[in-house]
Image 1 (tube, one colour):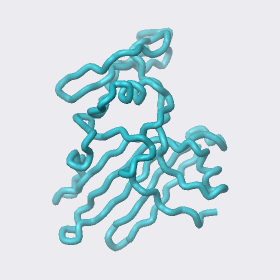
Image 2: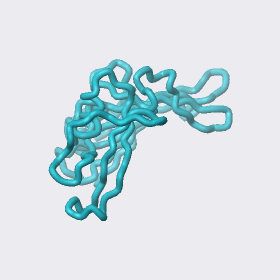
Image 3: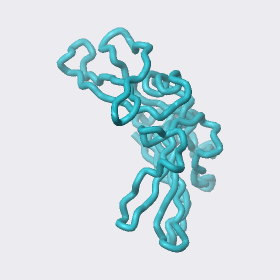
Length: 194
């Protein structure tokens, strides 16, 4: 695999942009998975706040992006299927709700033909206006949605989820946005890397 960490930050204030990307298979056209974060220090307190977006970049691998001077930023999601059915693909169903919010119940199996290797999981989804969005996010291996999460630092140095900056988060702690949303963080400028 290949990993890349990029940053364009002020070392005195920690303001700026940074990103983290991984190509697990190291293929030249494999979409890297990772995130971009923008962080700003409060001018009075010095406490940090910002937002990050995570997902996959469909334009090619880390190596291809560097060679062709492409800006790596999330433009979709790429993750394993989350299905409630052990065999036969994913069911088309609505989310279940509990005190934590709306979720899809899925299973991860090391051997899909052997139920004893399966573990149940809950994948919480944001408060989306269309259930298809949440279903696609959890059920499809590749989607056009990007996850966005905002955060603030408190006086103890602990980072907390900033739900006031994410109107679509609901109880999930993140929101799903299409890859052309104007509220997605700006990736660091890595154009000079060769």
